Image (cartoon, rainbow, N blue to C red; front, side, top):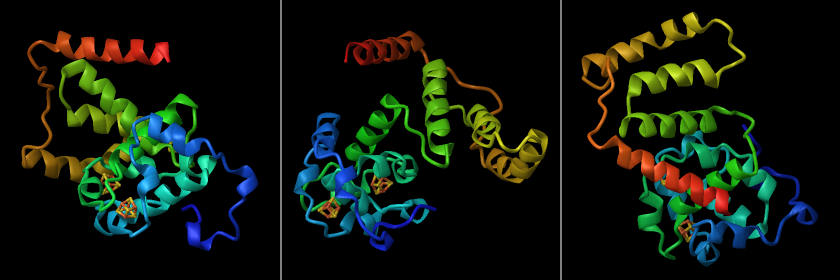
Length: 202
Ligand code: SF4
Ligand code: SF4
């Protein structure tokens, strides 16, 4: 786990990017400069326990222009986009959108966190949505297992490790054996094509 910001020896301002906050706001992270560090976002975040920096710390690091640290953190990938922080923020900071903007910038710049599981999860998630128009949890878990731990050669052992969880999900109706493709999947594919075209034009 990365060192929490208050434990760091010093913040190297000479390595900070003063334009980073503007870049984040332009990418959709609105009102980030309005944050007054109350910590409400971190207090209500359901995934903060798995983050290396809390949402409040991420916002402060964006203020300070700590681009490298923010874009290589796991926090932006661990965020589940639940919007709890964004709806509670007393300053109207679009924190969830900040997290999404940071993911977009990280992808655009080819940054990967020390633990690559976050980007692997998101890549496979959006690929499956493009294919079926909705999630197929079985394919997602198989792809995630296969790609997220390349250092583990024995994939069969990994599957056996995860089998009890898969069985529990299956018995509760949370794991379909076949995908359910939505009607008019072409409309979803058109959205993806539109986004790709817009990205290429940037
Ligand atoms: S809740 Fe809003 S104002 Fe408070 S620390 Fe989080 S972003 Fe800043
Ligand atoms: S949107 Fe992300 S950062 Fe905000 S509370 Fe939910 S998981 Fe935490």
